[in-house]
Length: 485
Image (cartoon, rainbow, N blue to C red; front, side, top):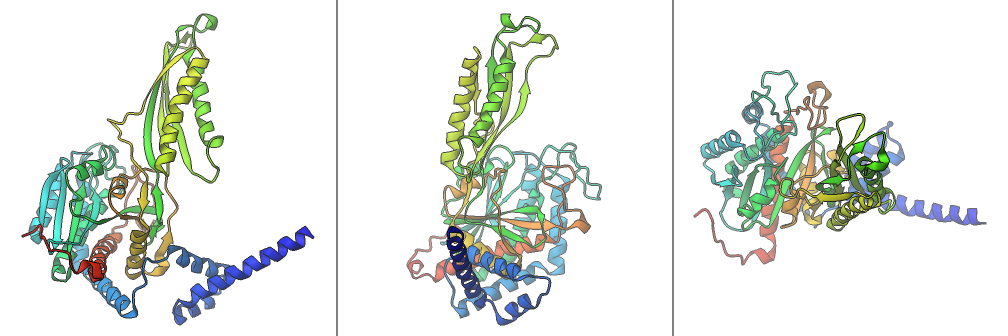
């Protein structure tokens, strides 16, 4: 009887889900639906899953057919400009110049100078320096609304092993996270937007930011006024694990908050053959390391994602000597500030507590001065919807995916704490071009075919945002206090 009841409920739920999927599919064009159902390689489940993906992505406000046609036309014109042969060649040359001269956090002097030269040639006004090497440029009316686009500039302390003509010329430094591509795509957007400046219904703010990899450059850019007057911001990161032209996003938390810790556990050294005369900090450190894992397995909801990882443990130097102290260090990650700061508190409590049990003492530091805490990157729902609408125009709805939350930190998060923001991933995987290696490795490279697509995506995000905001009745009375006059 119980089995029959459950079966009936399951059947009813399946019918409801199928009807919902069919309703969503009905919104697709007849030709699109016909193509989907004619594809013999796809099962009905595949078609249904694709429809549910579209439903989950959603949109903020449905545009009228005439508005949709207008916005689509604008996006297609922007894409056409980005794909002009002379523009593509220019983008590649810019990226290769930046790639050859990688610079670490707050040392991006040559990169910053290149950006300013290109902006000067385009006739674009800018502010400099912000946060040591940062540049903020302005295109448009000089008045509201203001929308920002951001790119990070810094490289990593890695020796490049990719053997090609434009390999890094700075020993021990490499653009191994795609920031050379990020800067290039934002400069490409600047070129397109400047050409379309008479059509802009407000001001686009271009933020070229230092020190994403270390030093929380976004936080310093905000402190120096990069977001002055800005009401929304968009950013992207290249992704090696999705094909070129794929856009991935999600509302809510996308990247985790990130922090680091170091603990010194002190006991009493002695001869390894006479442990009763010593107080062994290695045993205490071992107990702490094991107990820290219980924060995830025993204190965290199984449906919530957190990470605590101990990455270093340093103690004695001899086989027969118990050391006086052991130092351990590591990282912790969470997708909400509440969870993040709960982990921080419990990490200290566990290390200090376990040390007391083992007759040791412990001090715990969170290294906030050297490595500032990075909050979670949280996408505003409306900004996420905007990213999805523009991406559908630029790369096609079939290349739009729902992103899986990521544990690596991203300092774009600081912007998301101040104003509504949309951050997304842009696929650039191409096995024929070798762009299949993970970031922060010596073999990382990008598929340069992504550059015009990323430039168009940036430009279309900004121009459509300004058009949509300006068309709202509440915007008609906003005073035009131009910053460019």
